[in-house]
Each structure stands twice: as C-alpha cells, then as structure tokens.
Amino acid sequence: MGYSSAPTVLGILKHLKRSKSDETSGLPSLLIRDAHIWTKNDTTRGSILVEQGKIRRIARNITERADGEILAQRLLVLPGLIDGHVHLRDMKLSYKEDFTTGTAAAAAGGFTSVIDMPNSLPPTDSAERLRERAERASGKILVNVGFHSAALNDYDEVRAMKSAGAFSMKLYMPSPIASLDIDDDKVVIQVLNAAKQASLLLTVHAEDATKFPMTGEIRTFAEMVRLRRGIAETSAVRRILRLQRPIGCRVHFCHISLPSSLSAISNRSSGHVSSEVTPPHTLLSQNQVKRLGWKAWMLPPLRSHKDTRKLFRAMKMGIPTTMATDHAPHTVKEKARTPRKSSPGIPGLETALPLMLTMVNKGKLSLGRLVSLLATNPAKVFDLRSKGRLENGADGDLVLVDLKKRGRIDPDKFFSKAHYSPFEGWKTQGVVHTTIVNGLVVYREGEITGEPGIGKVLKSGRHV
Ligand code: DOR
Ligand code: ZN
Ligand code: ZN
Image (cartoon, rainbow, N blue to C red):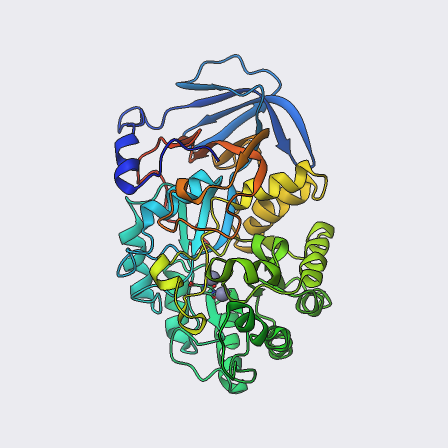
C-alpha cells in the first residue's frame, strides 16, 4: 500500500489541508480528465466534472475549467465503494477505533460510504442513542456514515429508530444486543413483524450459539474454529428464512461463510432476501488460523479450504448480493489472549479493494462483479439511490485506482488503530490512488488530504 509512515490521528490532523469550500462560493468543482471510467458494464475513456458535490457531466472531452483538476490518464475511476457492515467503535470504545481513524481507513480503502453496526458502547439500541451517535460522528468523519440499530420487538421504538434514519435492525443471534430471548420463535416473529410494519431492513448475524455451543477444552485457535460449527450458521439461516417467509420483511444475511448457507438463501427467489460475503471468508481458510492464530480469529470463523473455494466461486458467479468488510478492530492486547478470551474480528477497510483488484488482475474476478458487490448492489440493498454508480446527477463519490500498480499489505501503515491483518505480507496488484467524497479529495497516494467533517451522516430514506 506504500504509505510513508504509520499514520495516527495526530498524523492525519497534521496532513489536513483546508478545502477551498466556503460559505459564499459553495463547494469547489473538480474535473477528472482523461481517465478510464467504469460506466454500467464497461470502461470508457473520458472526463468527469463534479460540481456542488454531484457528478455534473461525463463526456469524452470536457473543456470547461474547474477549481481542481486531476489528470487521470493511467487511472480507472469506479463509483465510491459502499460498505454496509463496519464497526467504527468510538465513544467508550475509542481506544479500539474512533470515527476519524475508522473513516480514514475507509477513505484509504476506496470506501466513500459505510454503515456502522450497533454493538458500540453504549449500544445503538434506541432512536435517541442513534441520534446521539450520529451527532458525535458528524464533524469527525472523512466519508459518509450511516447507522444500523439493534433488533428490538417493541414496535414503537422500531418505528422511532426508522424515523431517526436507521438503515436496518441488526439481529445478532449469538447474543442479542438488546435483551431478547431469540431462542423463542415467538420473539423472532415479533422482531420480523416490527421490521415489516416499520419498513425497516433486518440484518442478521446468523449463528445459533445456544443450539450448537462450543463445549470441551479449547487450547488452540484451530480447535476453537472447528468447534464453532458450520451447522450453527446454516441452521440459523434456515430458521430465519422459515420465520420470515409468511411475514415478508426484508432480510439481509451478513458475512455468510458457507456455501450451504448461501444455497439456502439463494434458493429463496424472493427479492426480499439478500446476502453478504467478506474478503477473509472468500480468500482464507482454517489453514491460516493454524498459522496465524488470533490474527485470523473472527466470527463466523474461517472454514475449510474447500468451503472457501466454493464460496469464492459462488461470489464470482454472482450468487451473494454484496461484499462487506466487517471491519472489526480490537487492540492486540484484547486479541492475543487464550482462544476463548480473545476478541473476534479483524480490520478490513484497507485491504478489501487491493485484494479484490488483485483477483481481477489474476483473471479470477471480473471488474463488473467487483463493482456490483462493492458499490451497485450495496446501494440497492441499503436504498442509497444517488450512490453506487457513475452517472450524471449521482453523488460525487468516486475512487480512482491504479489497476497495474503493485503493493504489499502492510498493517503498520493502516490508518485504522488496529495494526494487524491475516493478509499481512500479501502481494497485491491494484491500489487506491485517490478517494473523492461529496466532490472533495479526502485521500490521495497514501495521505489523508481532507478534513474530518467532509463525510455526511446518512439517514435511511432521506434522498437529496
Ligand atoms: O468477528 C466479529 N467481530 N464478529 C462479530 O460478529 C462481531 C465483531 C466485532 O464487533 O468485533
Ligand atoms: Zn457479525
Ligand atoms: Zn460485524
């Protein structure tokens, strides 16, 4: 990735340059000249003019002048990526990550919008908490940020969370964020009904930890991963699908780790059900857990080499709907403990795009599929109507990549506070060159160039 030093928040602040924006002249315009541009199904050569934070024009030649210009002859322009599943922490978990470092990591990884999960401290489990979290984020974020809320069965509160702009209610089955007896079907049905009545998406971490507990002595991470059985995921997926069918609310299954779970979801041909995969579950297997221990410990856990290969193939064929990073930073101290005490989760925002561009360069994934998984489809699932595509009138969220440039995953250079990765040392081809959020350059060649506050707080259903 090639950053010059390990950046910290102070590092970021030192590098801040004021944008030309001011109250009287509005946002500066930006012209990206002579680039390769991804439009719909192919790349074409041309220029993009961004004015007032929106894409104004895409054409072969644009002669008018703009406040800023990027000559992008070697670069490929993609719609800014959208990550529907990140844990930005902040508040009482700021020691793991905060809104500025997390969104700096997003910008460095080519993500221009991210949606934060509710297992924060305090948790996002009411409309009021969601508003507080959004208020805390505004002014601190470098990319656009939306919020998920915790799954509840109280209809009035669910409706209030929807009005506050929640993108979904997250049902965390291993241990629900708000106290709910989710082993009781009646309670899950209440949650599904509340989601339906409030027209709110339900996102699900499908792992049935009660029915399939991890028992016995666990000495190694490899043992831990094997005991966290795959059937816990597939059976949870089937159960939610069975309960959802008569209700018909929208359900999005997070970080599917097994081909059998994916088949159960894709056999349901209703438009109300979608699925998500992550880079680690499609690229890494239990073999890496043996070697890397806590660095490869996440939930759901990594699976067998065979399952990973099948999941990648399904992704390549277009079966899962989206890809998300599940960026879940913890301190090394919290991770480098005994397996049962180690915190699951790894940072992912700064590795996803270089890893997937490498797959494109190797001919293992098409560029079109990459854009669908990381931009167009998340925009559809989360109803971000003006994002996820390069078109006149769309938001000025773009990522410029150098598809040929080689790099190496170096966690010391992450903007995230979590400086480790199971992909450490992997050689990549395809790097993020520049990230543009709302028409402003926030990241360029290893440096954060924008100011916290450039990112907007996104609210579901509010279309500008
Ligand atoms: O690995 C994980 N980390 N899985 C989860 O479901 C939660 C996440 C976290 O918040 O750390
Ligand atoms: Zn999860
Ligand atoms: Zn997660």
